[in-house]
Length: 331
Image 1 (spheres, helix red, strand yellow):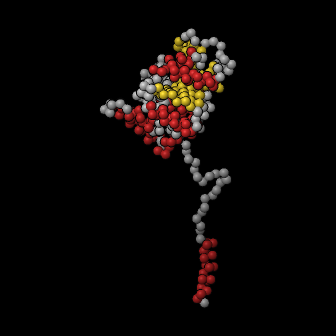
Image 2 (image 1 turned 90 degrees about the horizontal axis):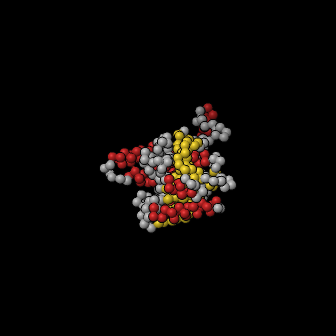
Image 3 (image 1 turned 45 degrees about the horizontal axis):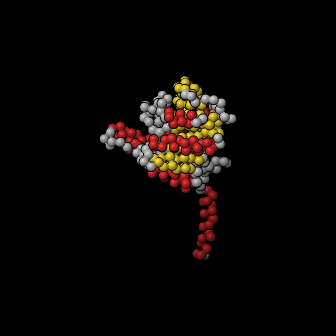
C-alpha cells in the first residue's frame, strides 16, 4: 500500500489547481504592443527628419543695387520666430526653370556683431555675379532675427530647413538647382541639413568645416580662450548644462553630423587652409576620410599656409565651387 500513496495525492492537487486563484496574465489588445515605443530625441538626425518644415518668404526692403544684382532683406518664420536673410536677385532674364540658388550658411560671428546686410557680402556677391540667386540666412538670435540659439548649430539647421521650404516656392528660383555654401560653423549646419533632407540641395561646399565627433564639436569652441575669462567660464557652463539637459551619452552618435555622413547623397567640395587657427585642419581631413569610407562623392582641396577664410586662395576656392555647381546645372 505504501508505494501507491502518491496516487491518492494527485486528485488533491488537481482540486487545488482548480479552486485556488491564479496570477492574471496581461490581456493582449489586437494591434497593441506590450513594449512602449521609445521616444525619439528631437535633436537627433532621426528626430529632425520627423519634423515638418515650411515657410513663406517676404521682401522687407531693398538693401543695395549693383550692375548684376539687387539685394533685398527678406523675412520668413522658423519655429514661430521671425527670421531675416539677405537675398541677392540677379538682373536680367532668368534661365528656363528659374535662377539656380546658393544658400550661404555663415560661420561664427558674435550674434550682436553679425549683420544681415553686411556680413559675408563678398561671398554672396560672387555667386550673384555668376548668375545665382543667393540667400544668406541670419540664424535665430543674430542681428534682428528673433530667438536664442539653444544648442546653436542644431537650431540653425532648423532655420535653414524652413528657409529652404520657402525658397522652393519663389517663382524666381529653380527648386531643382539649390546649392549650399557653409563656412566653419556653417559647414556643420550645411552637413546636418544634407543628412536630414538629402534631396534639399543638388551639391554643396564646406569651407573649413567645424565638424568632428559630438559632443566635442559642441564643446571645443566653448573651451577656447583665457581660462580666467569669466565669459569663457559662463559659456562653458552653459554648454555643459545644455548638453546634460538635452542628451544622453548613448544619443551622441545620433546627433553627430560626422557620424551620419552616409546619409549624404550629393557631391561636395571640402576646402581647408593648412594654417587655419580656428578650425583644426585635421578636422577637414577626417571629414574627407569619412566621406571616402562611406562612398560620398567629394573633392578635398587643401591650401598650404592659408588661413580660416582661405584668404590667399579665395578666388580659386570659389571658382572650384562655381565649377561644381555648374557641373550640376549643365551650363
